[in-house]
Image: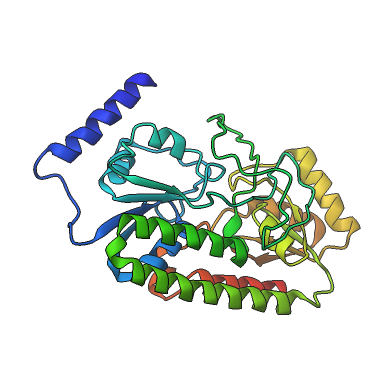
Length: 323
């Protein structure tokens, strides 16, 4: 491992000093992001003032991704690197251990935000969007993770599925951009304010749309909807865990099948951009309908070209939940 890190450091240094290696134009700052939720924030708030790029390609899972020497070079060449948090992108700690953070500014987008408990405790807790009365546990950004298969999550990282939390992340991104590029502070402030207004409106749409929902239990394949459930008084039952690639045991599948049958669950929600095999197994055993509910961890280039974005997909999620 030490030899590998030395090799990557050499590659990074080589890329930065050798003529002919790609260097971004100096008239705009370059912001490197990990995956779609943070990419969208940086794009909306940065606007035309910055170049925003995304490290992971469409379909790559942020939970299980392993960084490469090429990634280290890309991050080191950027002026600012933004990622979701240590509970989402486990690869980032290794990546940052070989990146000169004096040359590249780094932002963990959930910094300072109190998060919901992760898969060590699935019981719902009382949540205050104003965060005046928070959780007993706070997000510890210094804790270490075991970088092996089967990561455990002390905190749920899927904050963006609650517009209120996402708005707090937007504030962090705005502040980081202003620190990076004070000359464009007015642009970043204006763009962030507009985004915040849109997120407030989206939150109200969810509040109104889900207020009279008769069945408030949602069965999902991927346990990504804890923040959405917590915000709008829903109960999330997940077939698999917080990691998108987590596979339940035969016992867990059997237990979930029993729960779906006993509680007369008619719908299982799946993200159509990922494998739905696990949910198909439960669906076949119970007769429950499979219905799409996007985690927004992935969005295809084709969707982006067609004008789809965070807001359009979240509104489609609302339509599916109230169908």
